[in-house]
Length: 90
Image (cartoon, rainbow, N blue to C red; front, side):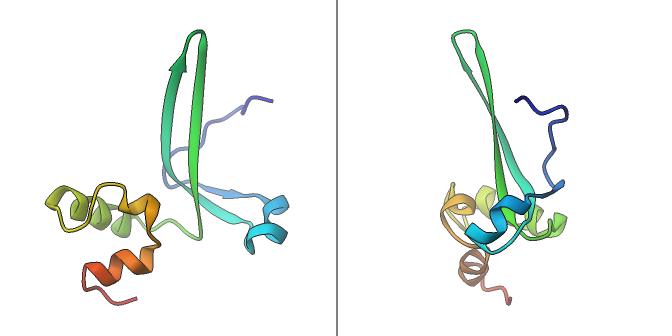
């Protein structure tokens, strides 16, 4: 069933059916990707558990642009691992 409204980056979603499987039901949209195949438009929503932090989103992407962390680190590593690489607390 198609979504009536496409959430944007930073918007929160509550998905109760995932709580038993992943331990939380509170997520935010980390990224959105569009893929076009033949006559289909596929939209991928990348969700992360927790609450969106606009400063951390900015700082993480700044680190990617400055080469402080590798491209794709925001998908392959947990936030605490990225913060350790950047010498940040928490």
